[in-house]
Picture 1 (cartoon, rainbow, N blue to C red):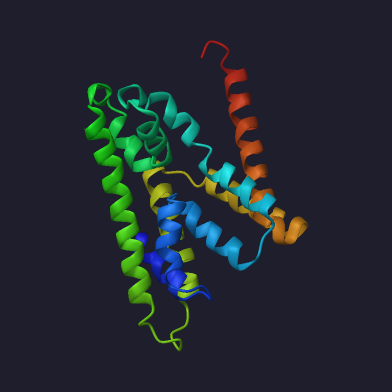
Picture 2: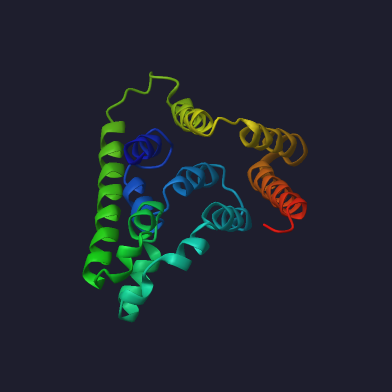
Length: 206
């Protein structure tokens, strides 16, 4: 994904060096792909901020089980909070990680950041070598996420939620135009909350 994002930046109107800047300063994986499109579209700051909150809101729940109590020092806590990614949380979600040392936790998070920034930079440098005559790269990222969605549907043996998300995107695009992304995500979240509310209401003892 890092290499793919680097190529996307190199093939955009931005200079290639914006790729390592994004990956180091933002360091938010999928959000970087979305922000690249928002930056190129000169989206309002309110749209950028709301999109960032919606995409990364899951990190609030990561913090509930992340062993932050093992990370001592204000500077270390700030860095650990900044680099709390999906991968870092996945490695520290086990009960055994609750006794890890501060050095080990920070080393894990730093290694992920270095790996991400390095792969993004490599993709950006490699992307500058791709001739401008090559077409279709702008759809390559869309195809990449479609493959991930297909794999998820195969693993969970359901297509209901992806179809609902697609419907939300189409409806928001028809009604909101350039604000489609934020509107579609808000509508999808609202439908998910309603779905789980009615499930729990039907199962009062759950």
